[in-house]
Image (cartoon, rainbow, N blue to C red; front, side):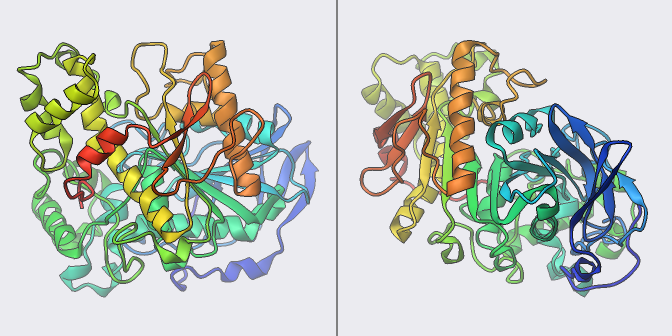
Amino acid sequence: MHGHTTRRGAMFGLGAAALATPAVAKPRHSAPVVATAYGRVRGAHHDGLLVFKGVRYGADTGPLRFQPPQPPTPWRDIRDALAHGPGCPQRGQGADGPTGEDCLFLNVWTPGADAARRPVMVYIHGGAYSAGSGSSPLYDGARLAARGNVVVVTLNHRLGALGYLSLARFGEPRFADSGNVGQLDLILALRWVRDNIAAFGGDPGKVMVFGQSGGGAKIATLMAMPAARGLFHRAATMSGQQVTASGPLNAERRARTFLDALKATPDQLAALPVEQLVEAMAARDPILPSGSLYFGPVLDDRSLARHPFWPDAPPQSADIPMIIGNTRDETRAFLGDDERNHRLTWEELPARLGPELRVDISPETVVAEYRALYPDWSPSQVFFAASTASRSWRAAVIEAEARARQGSGAFVYQLDWRAPNGAGAPHTLDIPLVFGTLDAPGSITGTAADATAVSDAMQDAFIAFARHGRPDHAGIPAWAPYDLPARQTMIFDAAPRMTDDPRGGERELFARVPYIQPGT
């Protein structure tokens, strides 16, 4: 599944789509072979499913560095789709396998390459726009596809500086879209789904995108990008929101910091070894108070001309049903490994909490309010709850309220079920529950009866949402859309329940101060 295009084309040109109508080819040695618009691919049988891994949806991005993606060059032979394609080069080990700039690949799990027209569930991975891939064992689509008789797709795309370094203000026209090429990769992948998924037994008119953390943020951004209009029909975000995008001037400052770290010009950047670019991503961010460079979508007035959920919900997506979810103890995933945070005193708490609130409010005020709301809580419980409510949960509330004011509503959930290792309900806990990958490497759910029950309820809700645009099913109470002032929310726990305005006191506390998406 390698090679790259040498021809020029429109930003999202799909002229090759006219070369073939997707159809199932005759199997060879019993292996499933499917004809796509670009050529035939050979997958494998696995536990009653057909699985295709490493299917190319775009050309090698190495020759297209910082430029919009292009569709693949068609091929005449049958290409094996038996192993995940490379992830985007990145810091750390988040790609779950090899990496390379030739990274525009996707994976498909389907009950049959036939004419059944099943709902399609496209998962967009997280990793804060800078890490991860669609190859994680947690995202294996087999259980979801088999349980729901749906087609599941995961994918890779450009990340970090390769996907979101904005060089638009440096005068080089070919880099005018560089701040959002990672998003443009996603749009190209969704166009591939539209044009090819029927050959894999999917319905191109019933495509659901879902994603956790950065994946949810990417989806929120797609909902405001005109080029994505019509490419998906349901959207579910899991602990991932994008209220505001990076402004062009902040994006320019970050690009200058990146260029300074490399002592390079934009033209030179395009030819440097990719390893040097990855190393330079560790440069200190010039805007955030601490940490390495933030990369994310940019308000470039080209592919993204408005903030995703400010000042309101994007009108272009008002007709797309939406799920907005979060976990009760998000920040335990980021702050829980520091033992000091588990044995805080009341005297230590304000100084420890202040930097983690991510909004400008007196930590002493926050502590006093929490002690009044929850008089039996310890300082550490207040620390994790307040840091979650002010930065992770706050954006979910803003998006849900914006949808309610728009009249489009959203189905809102909160995961309260706690993992058996004492970590509470941290960021990422809902991934294996939704995929049914409870026993996959990296899962902390365990496989006990309560974990299985919560997973069954969440899987069936997402499957129902993909199929009908509503998450209701027999295993949960009737799920009402979020409206004002009720703020109806599904609480996923050992016994799912509907609650109005959960944590209302916390919500009101942080509503007193303005919120700007961290990094933007």
